Amino acid sequence: MLPKTVRLKKRWLFAKTLNPEVGVRLAANPYYAILGLPRPQNQNTAPAPPQFGILISKKVDKRSARRNRIRRQLREIIRCQILPQLPPALCSYTYLTYRDWE
Image (cartoon, rainbow, N blue to C red; front, side):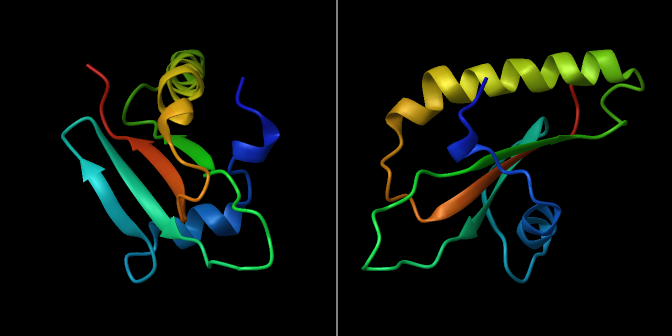
């Protein structure tokens, strides 16, 4: 499970990240897209870790159990492989969206 400090849970942050005027596409391929939301830099506070949110649509699979399994697998990949490599001052919320899983 991802620590609370790196989870993206607010609906308005998901919506802001998906907005093409604000969010930035960091990477994409036929299976997923990684979108970023620039985080304002404040000199008075310590740099916060990047936050991750995962969205898996019903196009991937109609069954929620399978979508939740994919979500759990992605969280584990983020926790074990991606998070340790990222610097704490990465100035974006990062958001993963899966389009297709086959």
